[in-house]
Length: 101
Image (cartoon, rainbow, N blue to C red; front, side):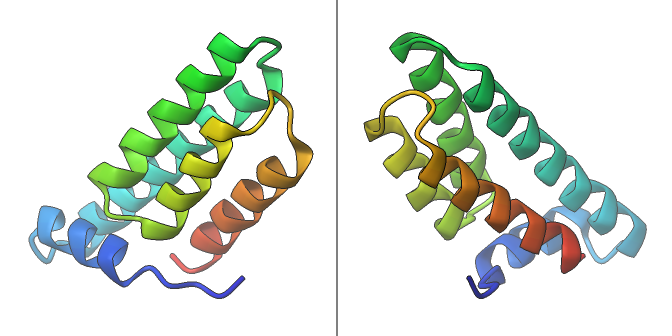
């Protein structure tokens, strides 16, 4: 999976106003929040909890213009709770984001 975070990076750069420390803080907060939703997805045992976590992930991805994560969140919402393939793909995406800070 290649990193394609142009819109994400541009959104965070605009919000940080050129302040590099704030940029890193906002980007870290985005990743941390997405990781929390991934954790909730891992722990979801029913359709309702799975869907709520997927929709929160979708909202986060949409707010920060992370198109790849948005597509993964859409896929997650349609998957069965605990679907390992989608969980691994989200984790891989977040790992790439963390490495490109």
